[in-house]
Length: 195
Image 1: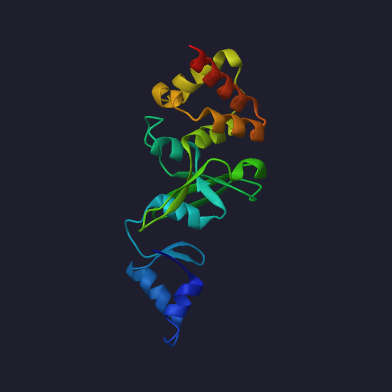
Image 2 (image 1 turned 180 degrees about the vertical axis):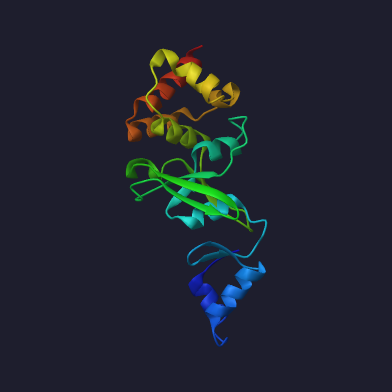
């Protein structure tokens, strides 16, 4: 369970020096420091739940979400999330791995999100459509004739999963993003539907 320093100070308010007690718990390994003022109590905590707590507002996206949904074959090292208001990339190195955050525009931040309500470790994640759109919007612009190769050779996306995308959501994301790569995805999905 993730705990802030204020929660811990309240828990240990009867101790003579709560900060010393917290340092002892960290040294003993029963409390794991994530960053200044933020701690985890579980050794096997879900990294996606940690990602949402390390930097807020944020949601798991990009390659991490694509891997979660099985769209890409690779195992992703570290957790990549989309954030709002950071203005630059942020990253944290913790005992649970590396966490990185990239801003997305305000207009797209709340679109296409899914709450995974795990009782032990709930987290916010992009839908598969949103995760791909986030990744495409942050990627270098791809030429239309190279777009299919980019999706299936470079990103190694699963074509069958891509065919099942929510085209309405993808179109809404493309309008909100206003990026060529996301518009190319919508065009690709429309062409697939026409086949």
